[in-house]
Image (cartoon, rainbow, N blue to C red; front, side, top):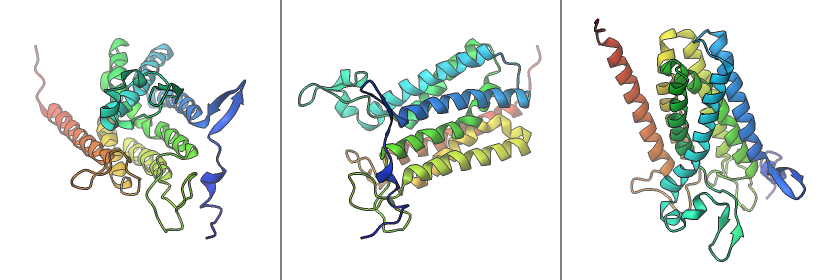
Length: 282
């Protein structure tokens, strides 16, 4: 069977960006650095351009640092809890150490990161930092969530370069031949990068600019928007081999996204209800 240049793109990608003194620097790790750098500057840009609130650079640096820590810790713990708890409960050291003791001691790297865990961790530690810096909580949180979709795109690009988290089998011309695979698969990483990243940012930003009151609900919009986009893209993404589908045919990612959508809708209703409550004067 002959393939087009598009079908074979993953075959020509090298996950290693550069090797220094025998140590490999992978594109996936570099994508994280680019994402964090971009996120910092985008928050600073929007905060000042639209005069959201007074903020000093050291305040933003503290928030971004805590948020990054939350992403990394949350993503790892989220993978352990949501995707492979039965394994790690019996191999606790492998949660934090880049080694496996199964079949002998060998280096594996820290493999397994969960987007939903990273989101929870970022929210918790980012919220702590915002409170610590005594900034307006909702203005800060909503500005952070405004830029999250663009930051997120680099993570999925890293997954694509790594040839991981690919989609289900397809006979469509859009399919790609990933390394160690003998059939075409949906490039679901690119679907996610596009719809959960660029498109979601475009929609939220357009609403944010057009309707000023929407700026109070950016976090809700993101949770609902991402959850919806990811839920449908999961139909094209290969389910985790050790988990598969649940009893109603949903993937673990779809279950977590359904919870995201409900959380976003609940937050929106709660904030709308609070806004209608009369202010008590003392």
